[in-house]
Image (tube, rainbow, N blue to C red):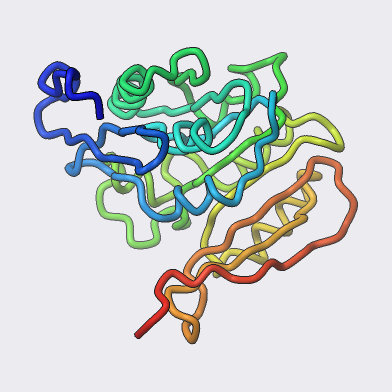
Length: 239
């Protein structure tokens, strides 16, 4: 990080600055809220963004996926949509900190209204790291930022897929998502229902002999039916 940056002017009380280990980029996070995890990093590796393409990240949180994608690809613009005002503020400050204002925009708004917010725009690529847990499963505090990130309190899988289907162009728009394997049958059924055809699947295992804990999925709007299961990601090589 540039030593001339005055961190005291960037951070709010309780926040920290984390090194993304990519292109000299940093991100502002608040450990009292929900901080990004390995799932966001894996999704940014899995998603394919071609030169000149436009990208929308639904439920962007503090903007980690648009920042990572901006560092890994030659996409033209990256837009993050986030409903929680505190996260929007952190994301916008991180974008400014990394001098990415010409490539990344953070919009405050509801995923359930994404198509109306961005109409009549289309995006070449949409990414999503949505809440994994269904409704009240293990729910304790519906207003807590960690709960909102993990549970379908403010948006559901249906919301993400419905709005993505409206914002992706036919036959070439690509959708990328990370989710939990226990919901895979539901995910694929709903993707097909919204005409986002599953094309690539990659499972993520903690160890080679353990069940997968995450699944990465690529879909194409209006694509033909053909799915490729790629070699798995093994997070830890030893036991």
